[in-house]
Image (cartoon, rainbow, N blue to C red):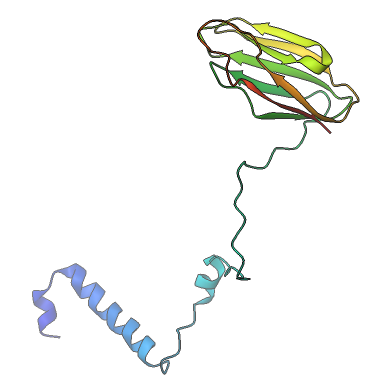
Length: 160
């Protein structure tokens, strides 16, 4: 090609490649080109459509309950507490609670008369044997002080 010596070197590489691509597409008789084996291996599978909209999750799935002897790490701070904690009935677990607040907070399971305070900026560890009562129970920081830093600090303790 005479014109190719006037084009930058990058174009000299691209133009022949485009020619090959267009030639391959036009030779298939109008049918969609098939993917190479490498492209098929990396392409995501096509989604099946049923006409029904895909379900939307309001909350990510919960992690499985930790085994007996596991550590459960919890972070609390003003107006923030885990939505839920899952544990197995009868398991012995160790809670590691970090208070990232400038205020004192607590971890409470009122139905089991469990109460532990955590001072501002502190991390505490405590062992707990989960009762053999399966179900969903209240948990949270239920301290009440002026300023409302404890509002909304509640979740569910789920015993499986």
